Amino acid sequence: GSLHKCITMFLSNRQQIVKIGSVISNLAPINSGVSQGNVLGPTLFILYINDLCDHLISNCVLFADDVKLFNTTNNASVLQSDPDYVSEWSNIWQLEISTNKCSVLHIGKKNQYTKYKLG
Image 1 (cartoon, helix red, strand yellow):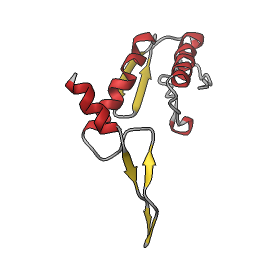
Image 2 (image 1 turned 90 degrees about the vertical axis):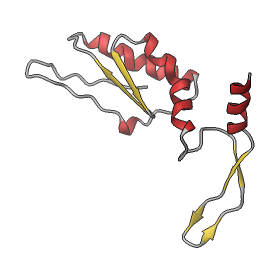
Image 3 (image 1 turned 30 degrees about the vertical axis):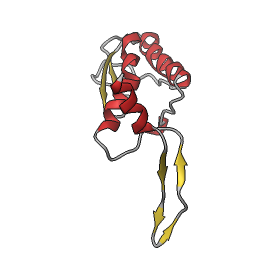
């Protein structure tokens, strides 16, 4: 329909230049991703990743390009299952996760520290 056509046009035939100081690059095609600095970009990204939370055990909150998972279980293997799924899901959808931006917050004195992994 017309919405599909609008989104296709928004994502097609895009080009960019890069300026560093007084040096300007040649015009280059953009073959993937959603351009930043527009209103539609974050909405398209949320639509793209919307099904991620459907298959997680933990609670999941999406905001722009961030995903927050939280859970109150003491079972480390249950908690690890969600990062495992997120890693598998991101490989299928060809999304790279910035693992340097990922962290775990342990809350409570009795919360046993466990090292979780992503990927």
